[in-house]
Length: 331
Image 1 (cartoon, rainbow, N blue to C red):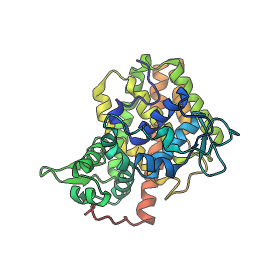
Image 2: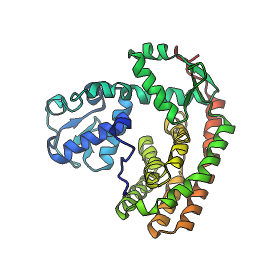
Image 3: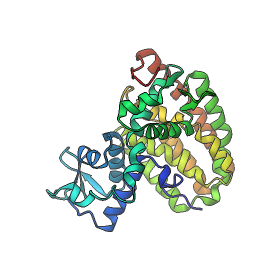
Image 4: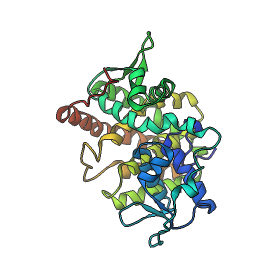
């Protein structure tokens, strides 16, 4: 099986930004969205009924695809740089894009997922806390079922868990847990990726290398959402070719490590002057390109081992310099 860029297990399991990116990309490539159409975070967020965070990520992906261009600092236009903007209503072209076949219901949990993930991941640095499902629903103005869907998604990533009395809690992301998660990753990820070599197409590898090389050339002028996508390219999407699905199930609970940097680097923590994972990812994909199983396992193992001190340092910095934010649904 060859792995696509957004091969994440089916549309009903994707995050809102991935769903939004996929649908907009399809409309633009089909030509149903005209060149020059202005896309702004505020207008799209209002259209979808979400916060701006997932919209921002989706727009960044479309920009990386070369399908949209920055426009006077006020958003993006469909097309290449220099495309004149068209003053038309966004809803006239995209109004029905997310309002067919019950999609509004489907998006209910996705629309607030990024906000809740950010809050919960940040709080996990400070210890274990209870989450009140009813208060979570009340805080965001949604039904209890929607709040539960968000918490269930977080549970699959090892961010939340339920006790024997069905009470939700945040799983602490302390130094010991980070060490434990990295030990799991170091043991399983190199084997999982090398065993799936046959399913990684040359086209997939070329695309990954091209994206990494571009980010390395642009750094530090690279958005946090792009950096996160590059992490997913290797540590999630490329691993989907692994034939041992039990490996993938175990590794899913380690994905909270990836979300750690996603929610603090570039916001609470300054972007580092140099981000070594870009060059290390390139090294891994070079081994994939050569179909060198032994070299691939070593490159992957070294990369995971090298990244743990940086993640530990970031988590320690947050604990030392910040206090946990207060929310009514976190006890």
